[in-house]
Picture 1 (cartoon, rainbow, N blue to C red):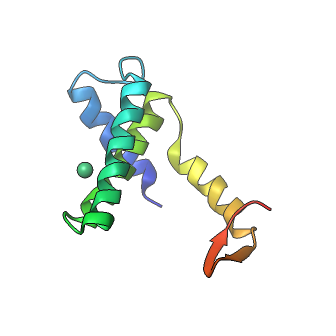
Picture 2: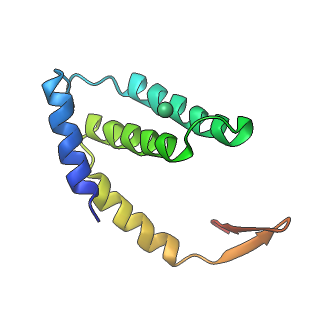
Length: 101
Ligand SMILES: [Mg+2]
C-alpha cells in the first residue's frame, strides 16, 4: 500500500502552506471531507462531474484529517481491512452488504 507515501506527500504539501497537526482545524477538515463526499454523491445523482476526481478528493481530505490528528492512516486501513476480510456478507433487499451482525 502507498497510503504512507500519500500521507507523507500531503504532510509536506500542508507544511508548505503553514499547516500541520497543530494548525489544522479538525472540524474544518471534517467539513471539507463532507463537502467532498457531497460532491461525490452529486456526480452519481446528477451525472455531472468526474467520479474518480471526487473519490480522490474524499481520500485526500480523509488523509488530511488523519494528519490533523497524527493518525497513521495506512496502519489503520491495514487493521480495518483485516477486520473486514473476516466479516460475512449479507443480502439486504437484493444488495450485498458486508456489515456487523
Ligand atoms: Mg471535489
